[in-house]
Each structure stands twice: as structure tokens, then as C-alpha cells.
Image (cartoon, rainbow, N blue to C red; front, side, top):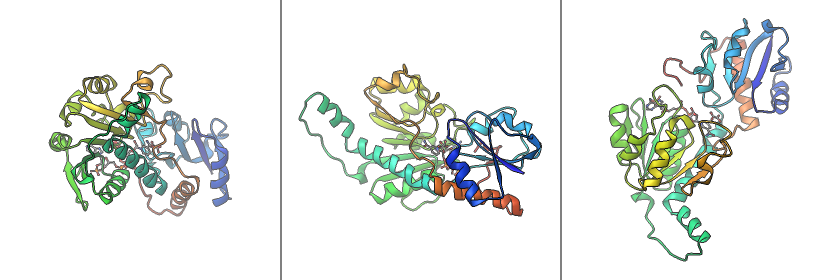
Amino acid sequence: MALLFACTGISPEPWVASIGAALPDLEIRVWPDYGDAEDIEYALLWGSLAAEMGRFPSLRAVLSFGAGVDHILNTPGRPQHVPVVRLVDPAFQAGMAEYVLYNVLRFHRQFDVYEDQQRRGLWVDHAQRTPASRRIGIMGMGILGSACAASLVALGFDVAGWSRSPKSIAGVSGFHGKDELTPFLARSEILVCLLPLTAETEEILDRDAFAALPPGGYLINAGRGRHVVDADLLAALDSGQLGGAALDVFRTEPLPKDHVFWTHPKISITPHIAALVNEESATATIVDTIRRLRDGRPLLNVADPARGY
Ligand code: NDP
Ligand code: OXD
């Protein structure tokens, strides 16, 4: 039986080497050279190949190569009976916390304004607020959102989180469900999106959401590009309702060269790098999942297709 590496845009060699070193008896095949389809028992998947998984009759689990599983669950034609396992790489939490802290501090301390002033040769200072007076809102209080919240609380920020179910997290004001979205947004001067992409969260960051934020608020989006209605974001930035946006994820990735986001003065862009997979820790997680399947032990971090994440 074999593992299929089916991750588009990711070089297979290091992963075949590291997983192979930990599981020397596991045969690893690389898409599209999967050989006899009946041999494929596990698939490591990233990108647009979820519908192809239907051709493997012995498939026991699909392992997402990312924390997000929208690329699998939202694909019609994927084998519905096969469990989908999220990649919960411990390195993601640290990486995402760094990305969020960097961007929160950039907006909080107005470094975006000072960068612009430098370009214009302006020597002007602006009032400095305390972290305790700055209200940060995190949409999505899961593994990544709660790690970011803890880092922001440690710096003294006034942090709130919004999730589907109620949460009680030290130092974080909890909001949950649709009814509490507007009051949550109304107190979020810097809004961080770390939601999974589901039918309920797609295009959640629209005109109404931006209008609900305090005027001059900021958006940091490291969830998915499809959380945002791009035209509404541009309108909110251009009207001044939003003071700036840091975007790591986009509807189309790579972001097309002629996309207006690239040159917008209030948008900063990173190429889906907020939290990158770490080869060592991600390999350990992938290997653990395969060992659990082999030993008949319960799987961890299985996505729930009904919830969509
Ligand atoms: P989790 O599944 O651990 O957490 C998801 C959170 O979102 C939970 O708190 C959940 O609520 C909440 N949520 C889901 N649906 C809703 C809803 N309809 N209304 C309110 N809250 C909702 O995910 P992770 O923290 O591991 O990852 C989050 C996302 O981050 C990924 O799906 C991916 O899109 C993105 N990501 C981006 C990366 C990057 O580099 N840019 C890297 C890794 C991930 P509840 O707690 O009640 O279930
Ligand atoms: C993601 C990831 O889900 O990079 O975005 O893991």
C-alpha cells in the first residue's frame, strides 16, 4: 500500500525524503505517476486535485497539506466517505502569531503612515496610543486565532474573539454566532481574519462588515481571499472607512500581476506566507496520522464536512 503525494506547486523531493525516512516501509508515489490506483491508501493533498481522489478505491484518508481544508471539502466530486485530516503543524501557531503581531504593531504604531511620510520626505509625528486602549478583534478563535490572541494579550492589547461556539479565554472578550458579529465588529479597530472558508464565512468581509467597524479601522486577512468582497474592500479603503489592509491571501493565487491590490497605497501584500509549513514538525504530524491509521487508533484533527472546517 502507498502514500500519494498530490500537492500542486510544492516540490515533492524533501517530503518524500523526510516521510520516507520516518516510515521506510511506506511506498510514496508522486502525482500523476500513481501506478496501480488500488495501491493508494493515503493521499497528501494541496491544490486542486481533490476530485481526482475518487479514482483510488483503497483510499483511507486524505491528509491536507495545509491547515485549511476548503480546497478539499469545497470540491464537488471528492470521495465523501474518506476522512479529511487537517495539517495542524505546531509551527503554524508561532508563524501566524508573528505575522499578526507584526501587522497589528504596524497599524497600531502607524508605521504605515510613517512609511508613506518617508516617501514624501515629511517629518511629522503622531500621537501614540497605549496597547490597552487599542481594540483588536480576531475572527476565528481556533488553533491559530487563539495563539494570536494570547500573543496580543501578552503585549497588553484589548482583545476580543469571534467564533461559532462560545469560548472563555483568559484576557479575551468572547463573542460568538451571527447575532454577536455586529457588536464584535463595532469594537474592532484592527480586525484580524483567521476564519476557515466555508459556506457561512465566504464573503463575510463585505460592505456591511466594513461599515460596522470603527471609522478608520484596519483589516488583516490571513484566512482566505474569498472571505473578502474585493470591490467592497477597495470602496472602504478609498472612502477612509478603512485606514489600511494587510492581505496574505487572495481569491486567485498567485495574485494576478495586473490586480489593483498590488499598487493600492493602503494595501500591503504578502504571498500566502503568514504561516508556512515547517518540514520537521509537519513531517512528524503527517507520520503520526499514518501510524494512527495503520494501528487503528483514532485520528486527530479530522475536518467535519457538515461544518465545513
Ligand atoms: P480552526 O478550525 O482551529 O479554527 C477555526 C475557527 O473559526 C474556530 O474558532 C471556529 O469556531 C471559527 N469559525 C468557523 N466558522 C465560523 C462561523 N461561521 N462563525 C464564527 N466562527 C467560525 O482553524 P485554524 O485556526 O487552524 O485555521 C484557520 C484558517 O487559517 C484556516 O482554515 C486557513 O484558511 C487559514 N490559514 C492560513 C494560513 C496562511 O499562511 N495564510 C496558514 C494556515 C491557515 P469554533 O471554535 O466555535 O469551532
Ligand atoms: C493554509 C496553509 O491552510 O497554508 O493556508 O496551511
